[in-house]
Image (cartoon, rainbow, N blue to C red; front, side, top):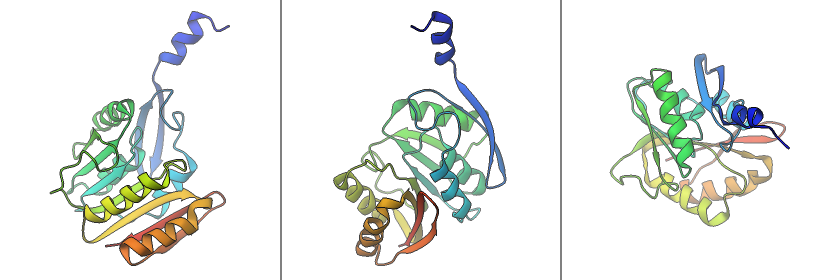
Amino acid sequence: MLDKKQLDEYRKDIQFKTTLCNQPLTFNSTWGIFSPREVDAGTLLLLKYIKINPDDDCFDLGCGYGPIGLTMAKLAPNGQTLMVDKDFMAIEYSNKNAAQNNIKNAKAMLSNGFQHIDKSLKFDVIASNVPAKVGKEMMSLMLHDAHQAMKPDGRLYLVTVNGLRQYMKRNLKEIFGNYKKVKQGKAYTVHLAYK
């Protein structure tokens, strides 16, 4: 049985420093949020290949505590970055991490995919580390809604487990009319589609 001291330790924020796309960042997270102690391998692979311009308006779909969205916001200082997650703790920590890294052009809000996003907002880049267990119905909604939420020539970057590679290729070709496999690693694949 765990003693009170150990439980109190678990309740404390987890904090770590890292560098993503040459941007030094400090993250706070907590147990219950995806990959709380370090940025996961899928996100690292995605960020290795993502291309962001200084003026891009960016959207992080399923932001967790903010590694993708806050990196995009730092790479696009003249744009705005919106991060969404359906987990209220993820939103709390993303906003906390934006503040502690002094990133003023990023904010996080609660949304189930694009469900709660103002339809008039349009983005140059949408990025997501897609959870493997999201389900095909939610995946369909996310991909169709991403297409609707993009500016002309917008870019959609997704990272998935390799097992979803053919599924993503098929669906992105169907919805966007194009597909590019950017990189396939041991466990993850980075996908790209243009509007």
